[in-house]
Image 1 (cartoon, rainbow, N blue to C red):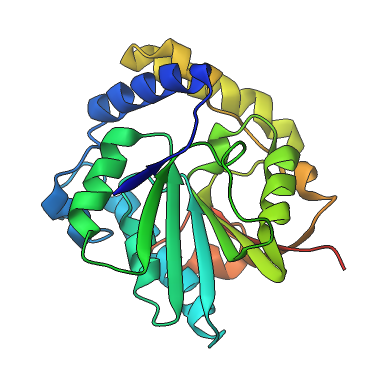
Image 2: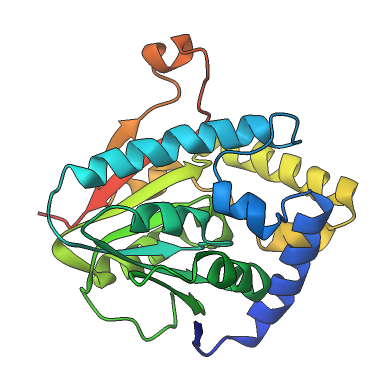
Length: 245
């Protein structure tokens, strides 16, 4: 079952546009495919992307397993729930996935409904009534770019984690400050080519400069020499943010 949280009106327009775009991009999967993600058919149009996401998700899970304590995890922008389901496989974890995409959330529920330690919320993390300081881990995986202000959403997430909690950012573009304008132009051109120019209003390009006020650590750097030497190169950073000490 999906728990409903009140939604701002503009989010409904985003939800419809976003789902139609994902259909066009061939990013809507069957329940059978979702159950197997991040593994997918070798000839799938996004197979290489899923190889990278498999590596990043495995790195995250291994980091969390080392904690050996009970974990209350929130995934923001969980989509079809594949990563939330993977995180729920950590023996000491309780996982909540939140998203504004009701269609894919319904797939998450029907695909993973047998898991007692996993549930989903339809809502906006910025306005949802979530327990303050109630999460040990908050994950943004390929979702941070849909928030207009990086400092604002990180500040909100920090208010929802415990004293020793962590925010994990992965599978997310983070740019140098002088790269954001060109990246925005590329994104707009891409959406125009697909017939979804309006989606550029909902996609934002964040830089590392916006993280400077926070207590963050880079766990994986795609620009590091050792990362570049790997056969399968992951294009995105993995960043951990903790409460300021």
